[in-house]
Structures are given as structure tokens and as C-alpha cells.
Amino acid sequence: LIVADFKDDNKIRELAQSSDVITYEIELGNSQALKNLELQNYPIFPSPHSLYLIQNKFRQKKFLKENNLPVPQFKKINSINDLLLVAKVFGYPFMLKACEDFYDGRGNYLIRCNEDISIAYNSFQNLEIFAEKYVDFIKEISIMVARNKRGQIETFPIAENIHKNNVLDTTIVPANISPKLKEAAEIIAKKVVTCLNDIGIFGIEMFVSNNDEIFINEIAPRPHNSGHYSIEGCSISQFEQHIRTILNFPLSKPKLLIPTVMKNILGPPKFSGNYRIIGLSNLLSIPSTKIHLYGKSITSPGRKLGHITCTGATLDEAIKRCSDAKNSIEIIVD
Image 1: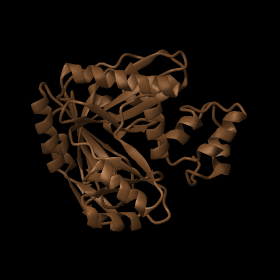
Image 2 (image 1 turned 90 degrees about the horizontal axis):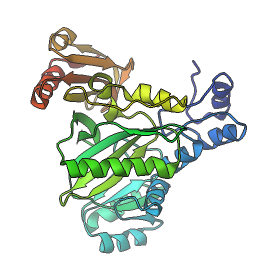
Image 3 (image 1 turned 180 degrees about the vertical axis):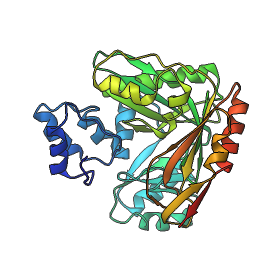
Image 4 (image 1 turned 90 degrees about the vertical axis):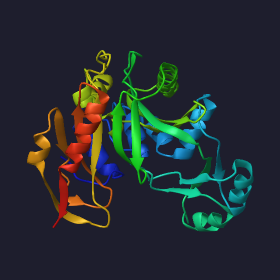
């Protein structure tokens, strides 16, 4: 166990020197430090180049567009005049986003009218930013896709995601979308990893528009929050599949065993500090319910402290169980 900042070059090297293979589970890592290690023949998956591409949202969108993958219109912003021009082209509303170091909806500003432009621009002082056309979506979906060194690619069942305050709240599997859209999402996910030409598991977040178009929102080069349902719901979990990819083992074809719903346990609003969770006995009395706690000693607003997964004979049964389970516990801040 090495405790250090994600960007600490020396500690990353120390980890590499004591490991057979390096992987990562967050985009905040030091891609240049990993690139230097890769040049010295340390095996790192997914590649530092993919991390470099993905950890900057503008670079990520540019890569996807260059490979003819569906993304909303976007434009780099270097001045407030750029933003005024974008407003005329995109129309309202549209998004202003920080390029790096933000996730879970942080670093985003929805610009609804002319009056928002200066406020939004000034809120991103000294940050690299870009504008993105707003997608009038009816659903948010995601798909985990894995690729090993042999070029074998396998996709997980498509998840339907519900966000609250820009943070994932609930994942429902199977997603309530048409077979045509499921096929389209799978094709897009496979094309992403083929274009990256990389190894590992990737979470592809997508919007389904009101006219049944699919747009890629973001790529995560790692196991993803919306793939946690796979631990209880699938024939193989996203975590085992990830290990299979980086060790170049054959990949298993993931199958949904039973309708599955996951809910995140998030830190309560306006509170930070030590906490405890009460009501576990009530939660564990609900059939086909599992709780995963992450061992975080401190809570803060919206922080992911764990998740609950419920399965059921029907999706409605799984949804009800998960709702009951979430309501049976309470986070007490000391």
C-alpha cells in the first residue's frame, strides 16, 4: 500500500517497480509519468495515451469526432467573444465545461440565456474550457466494453442511468430501450475501443435523444459506477473482466442473469465529517439485496460512500426492493 497523490511521479514509479502490471481506476492520474514508464517497457493498461486523451474532455471529444463517432457539437472557448459566438450558433441552452480534473457533473455550467454568459465564463477563470451543444435527451445509458490484447471485445448489458444533481443515483438493467437502440449502442461501444486500439474495460456513457439518436457523453477508461450492478446481476463482474483484459486472458461473454437495480449511497447535503450508517438490519431483511460500503471515514455532500444492489424476478420487483432498501438506512453525521 502506497499512499500518495495520484500525480506523484516518484510514487507511481515506486508502484511500477513492485508490480507486474499497472492499471488505474481514476482519470486524475499522471499520464506523462505513466508514459515515461511505458517507454521503459513497464506494462500499463489501458495505455497512458488513452488516459491522456480521455482525461481532457475536449481532446476526448475531438478524438471521437475524428473517428466519426457520434458526439454533440462542441467548440474550444478562449474568450468571452467565443462564447457569444457559440451562443448564436448552438442556441440556448448549451453547456460550458472545464476540460480537465472534474467529473460527476462538476465543472459543468448550463447556460440558459445571454445573462448567464459572463457569470459562466468568470466561474471558469484560469481553466481550459469548451462549449457543447445541449442534447435534449430522454434517457442516459451506459455500456461497459472490454478488449484484451488478442483483440477480443465483449460488451455488458446496457444500463439505464438516473442522475440527481449531476451524480449517478440509480442504475437499471436491462435498459428500457428498443432492440434497435441496443444494437446501435453496442456497435458504438465496440468502435470506441477499436479506435483506441487499447486494452482494459471502458465505460461509455451515452445520451438517447428525443428522436432516437445516440450521442457519446464521456468515456471512462476503467471500471465504472454504472457497471457495479454486474457483481450481482451478471455472469461475470466488470472487475473480473477488467483483470482478464490486462492479463490477456480470454474474455467471458457477460450475460444478465436477472433484472438488477443499483442505487448509490451518497453523502447527505450540507454535511461533512465523520458519519455512521444506521438501519442495516432493516436493509438486510429485504430479499435479494446486497450492500457494498467503501470504507470511507469522512462524508461530504454527494460523496459516494457505497451502493446497494437488488435483483428481482421482474424489473419492477428489483426497483421496489432497491427503493425500500435505500429508505431503510440513514446516514448520521457525528
